[in-house]
Length: 300
Image 1 (spheres, rainbow, N blue to C red):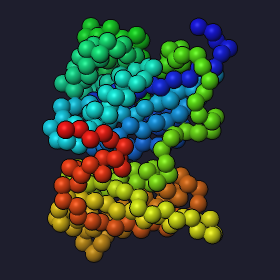
Image 2: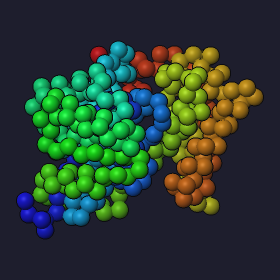
Image 3: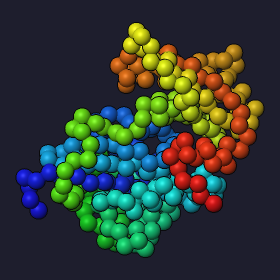
């Protein structure tokens, strides 16, 4: 390995739903580019985050959580996750220390074995369990698979992330950077805005709204005063879901819009005029065009 040469490569973050992949990628990149909620399966497609470490450029792919899919959307999400792993130079398997080795984690380990892929093991949320439990979990995981490295981290608190960067960059191939030095993601502003709003309605309606909802940015208009006018649509599958999103007297939708607008203004560093509409599109999760808009492959 030549230390003075630049390195660049793709790093897939794999894990069960809610293992902390989005939190980890945001921490490694140093900016929020993937939504984070306490609900599982909120990441639906592959997001790319770009981080620099010494002379290396790490291109992180935050994939949907891998689980046993039952519906078409779920199958597309899991397919996107495995595709991200297949294209990567480095794979990081993230395991939630609190949940230990659940069925989804076992499924990922077996999938990696079948594909002949070796991964870096990162045990996350280490601040939430006792040291003896952590040691037994580490031993159990390393008996289950042959990992190239094992690291103990807390994505939320930043513990162990510098060590993780060191290990990842040591595995990257030598070569020129693929993105400009100041670029943090390849996500368009329109998609990022839609993801921000989707995060807010998950946070606002986590007990009431099922996963059968999505957000699309339909209009992005640059104003002469430097502000931007954004029009978005929240698509749901039933009228009852529409009523939940809007809320009594429009309160829920106003709160979602307020939270999304405030975050977008901070991210874009300018004034945002955000208009959100709610529409019923029955069985949108079986609409091929919606998958294209989300960057997902149509899976039969």
